[in-house]
Image (cartoon, rainbow over all chains, first blue to last red):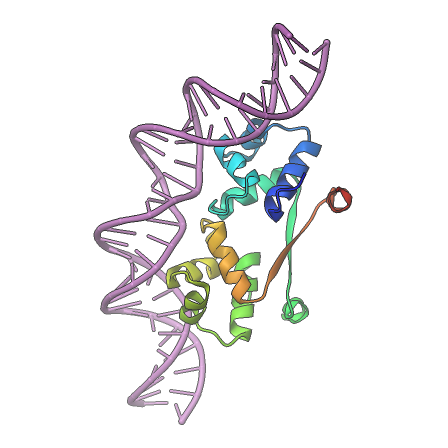
Length: 76
Length: 76
DNA sequence: TCATTTTCCCCCGCATACAGGGAATAACAA
DNA sequence: TTGTTATTCCCTGTATGCGGGGGAAAATGA
């Protein structure tokens, strides 16, 4: 059951697979339980640093795609 | 010249390649000029929705990597 | 060089994300 | 079913991100 929200779905999936509750994930990430709930319910008003804390606990790395990606990677 | 901040470097690179000033990028994205400046200077306290607005203007798509990535993609 | 543009970094006031508490509801297991 | 746990979604006070202004500093170009 996907919400359609890319980030929310990723986080929910990874949390469930990790066997963590929202509360436990929040504590491990050092954020409040509401913040995890808001992330999973698709709110995009969260602070980036808090998102990163959650992603780190779940072992998720962000990457990017763009027409300039190769140029960026080759740039010294 | 890289700041070492992943996101900041990506955004700066793409903005420069697009020939935009911080001010112009901010206006196109519908955010304040300070927000763009903070993004490029590595502040991770920005709101996710504002980051997304900027990435969209620069034609940057976020992706993720994780040990569970395949399982996630195959999951119905 | 000098003029122009851009970036940096402060300010202010307002809006809102945040943590934590708590209660209703939902999900789950026995 | 019944008991247990998890999630959803209120609330409140505090912290802070935000846009916009502005001036100094740096970069750009002629």
